[in-house]
Amino acid sequence: MIIKNVNVYTEDKKFEKGEIIIEDGKFQSTSSDSSQIIDGEDCYAIPGLVDIHFHGCMGYDFCDGTEEAIKEIAKYEASVGVTSIAPATMTISVDELAKVMEAAGNYKREYGSKLIGINMEGPFINSEKKGAQDATYIRNCSIEMYRDFQKLSGGLIKLVDIAPETNDAFPFIDEVKDEVAISIAHTCADYDTAKLAFDRGANHVTHLYNAMPAFSHRDPGVVGAAFDSKHTYVELICDNVHIHPAVVRATFNMFTDDRVVLISDSMRATGLADGQYTLGGQDVTVRGNRATLTVNNALAGSVTNLMDCMRTVVTKMDIPLESAVACATMNPAKSIGIYDKCGSITPGKDGDLILLNKDLSIKAVYINGEKVEM
Image (cartoon, rainbow, N blue to C red):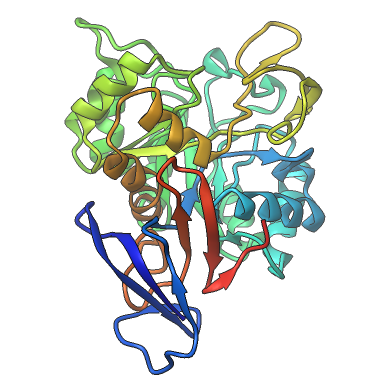
């Protein structure tokens, strides 16, 4: 397949007029078959989006712990241009988490987005910054638990979230830093503690600004430590609810589009109407694009998919499209070590592609060169 007359997004974060070749499910530099030629109609051609932090959509949650849930989640995500997914767990019981890991390990893709990883958001967090997590099941970092879950999942865990100030956090970092990406999350850590965690091997921050101490001129906390740790990626939920646009712009200036990772943090109500839902076993009320715990009105994830988050940073927050695309494709793939497979339109990588109209609406989605039914 050759897609001609498109503005191709390149690895140096620019759009260049050209064509794209996909054969045998991979991007190619040359074609041996010119029988299928598609006119791209001057669209933007960008890599398939990669969401490494979200919980669910269309009434399903990854923590449902079923292959059916994963299948339906993958189907929806593909339809909105998110071609690679690493859904997140919640702080639930050990038995329930084991069920989630086992379901992911047994899952066999038939269609929809590719399950390229698991983000283990709970339970190694601080109860004082639990957010929408259930404090009942919070516990200290456990190398044994992580390894048991990794075995059950077939090695799918790509990101583990921890609060570095809690007991056993630093031995955990020391032991597994070369096996999995480690993210600072749901934490009360001050600058020194967070910086030490990054120096020891943590390389990621979960939903920056949310569920952590505020960034202050005398106490910069996790945000300041992440800025000073140049190997570290930071997640942003850009649904126009979690973070003010001015802060998004400031964050892009601080961390640049080399280090920001756009995430959706979407929950099961995404794609559905307002109403009552659940997240991690807790009741959630959804009104418009805001999801909150019914009991205390705390933010409970988002109801916005990653493609809409990417559009929002461009159309409502004044971030250049070229930067937004990098932060929804390249950076998430790099941050969890899968950039050799996806995240850019590069010969040899999976043929995951989105054609966007000039108004950023989706014209077509391809996964491994196969067109997704919208």
